[in-house]
Length: 225
Image 1 (spheres, one colour):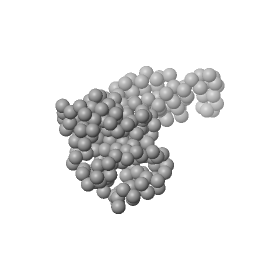
Image 2: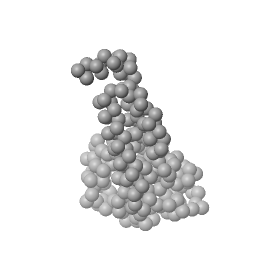
Image 3: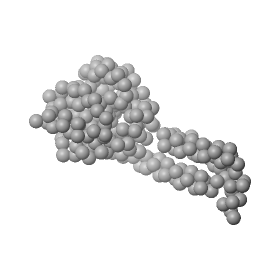
Image 4: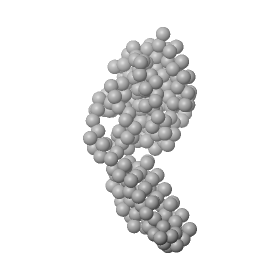
C-alpha cells in the first residue's frame, strides 16, 4: 500500500528530478575535497528527496564520505609527504628532479605526474595499489609529483586512495618548480609516467596503467638486470 502511495505521489518528472539530484550528490561526494561544502550540499538537497530508497542510498553514501574525511584527520605517514623546502630556491628542472631522486640512487623510480583536477589521473590512482602489489618484489620507489593542486586536495586524494608507504614519495611543489620539471622530462598530458633506472636515466612509459601490467613488468625486468 505504501509503495502504491509513493508511486501515485511521485510523478515521473518529479522522480527523475530526484534521481538526478541524488546522482549529483554522489558525484560531489566522490570527487569533492571540501568537507563543509559537501555537507552543505547534502543538507540543502535531502529535504527535496521524498523517495525512501533514494534517501537511504544518499544517506549511506554520505556516511561513507564522512568516514573517509574523518580518516584524513588522522592522516599520518608524514615520511611519504615531502616538503617543497627540499628544493627551496632551485629553478632548473633537471637539477630539481635530480635533487628529489638523490636519496633513491641505485633504485628504480616510477614517476607519476598527476593533478587532483585530472579525472583520468585519479581513476588510475584508484587502481595504483594493483601496480604496487604486482611490483612488490622489486626494489622500486614511487615518486608522485602533483600539478596545480591545493595542499588540501592533494592530501585528501593521497589519503583516500591509500597512496602511502615506505616506498611512496609525494611532492606538491610550487607551480614554477613543477613546470620546470615537466618541461625537462617532456610532459605533454596528464597523467604522465616515467621510469628512472638505477643509473638515473629517464625512460618514457607509455602504457595503460593497471590494464597491462605485464608490459610494465617486462620493461622493469629489462632495467633490473
